[in-house]
Length: 453
Image 1: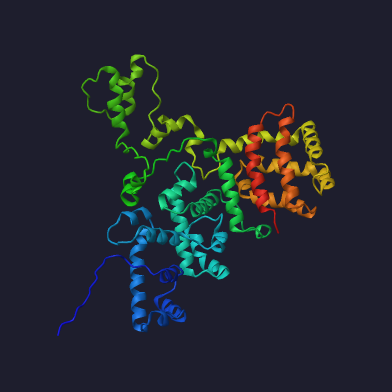
Image 2: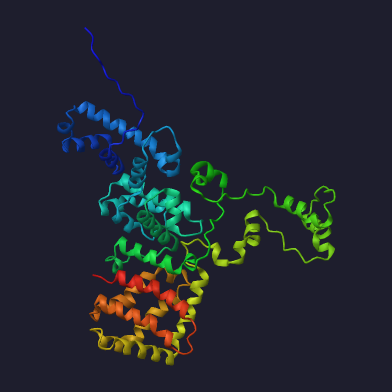
């Protein structure tokens, strides 16, 4: 008597989404098995506890092997060891980098350092997020921050390219990096009503209107510290990142060979022990040509002085940083409150436009000058690190709380900000309209997002 037996062999890596979620949440194998049992998996699958335990352990081993690839998602796409369909790869990456907003709110604005990581036990207790999950999410924040902190161009686009994240998640990570860069204060009591979503929306508005990228400067990735290591480990070249020129090994040798070109490339003598002496006798300066700039001390300095980036100072700043020249220029706006005639005319224009349109007109007329001083001075102080740190504290204390006490509605605030921003166009002698509107675009977006109970 013979019997037929069908055998199917495959090498596709199976991913159980429920077990993956339990692993991401930081549960042990035993805890994951217990939760699966309570979920009724035995009844659904018709299996035994022993098989369930073995299945859970097998999944955990797979996830642990995949984790090193998830640290640099492009490598997950390129590897051949795990045969995972593209849609499953995307799911693995998205869920690995997803985070709890309560945890992100606690860490927002803090330095992503070992000291902060040591505080995660307390953060875990306050947020209810498991300590293992807290550590994984913290490591993700720090990994993304380190990867993009020296890259120029829109933060969200850089993050999306390097980590293959969905656009919305990449924007949230961009906000976290932005806050970590500027170290904004977010922990004070008067700011506790603001959620992670509020701060993230403000960060996105500030980057959109205030960063160098807002001016349309071409995106040029800053030279990484070790291009060979980055290419070898993250394979950015596969994603279309421009190839970084190889760092010259010896700047002195470069100058010795290049400076002789003006002399018809004679035989190169042995390099003297004193580079300054070589420059004095052999350089183009000895022939009467224009004086050559002083030799930079290292290749990075040479790139900084000779590259196209040297022609545009702000272009050297990543989009996660607030441009220093822009913050310096904001001091010019103080004329709107320091010049009594301009302040009176500004008040007249705004009040005339809003008479009969808002429910707090009397309060606006009485408090306009104080409100205008607060709005202008918040920007005028941003050249100092301490005042940058207190940016959101100042907005709440000097604008939002006074408006709340006068019973402004969100609609009243929106109308006021619209006319307040537009009115200086009609102020004779005010020459900073473009700067003013760029500044107020972000301020208005932040205030309207933050103005709630």
